[in-house]
Image (cartoon, rainbow, N blue to C red; front, top):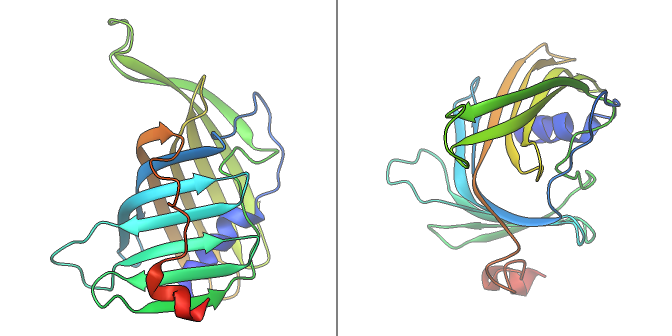
Length: 203
């Protein structure tokens, strides 16, 4: 249930922005870490993204002390299918999704807060990084709150997303944080979005 609520956060924002626009590269891969501060739900894995074909994949890093199943998750939005494989048991689960693909970008109209520099200011070239920061007020059917996003200034590489808010019906608090690390453009394998072999019999 919390997973669906968090998806709603990123799909419902349709406000328009002041200041420059910024959208992530259409195809990239990254190490992604996300954390729900209210439930202590943590994910850490290799993320692959294709905005043109509307495909996403997250292969979680196996943690020895994990308290929940860790998965390989493939979402094919055009087919409205979600494939998940338990990385321990190799059991596949196939579900139909009912939410739209959401590009990783600044949704319009967000409020542009300005640029900041992380790293060494005034040092040698490449020792600092300019980040643009935007804030959205989300007022959806299921959630409300504020979403803050940061991207690199020139390439629009995603850096972080933070949401503070609550569910409208139950007033349940939501504090969610996602960070993108080691972003690389393109894909390291042509078959990264292939349906896992464990799921082929259910395809």
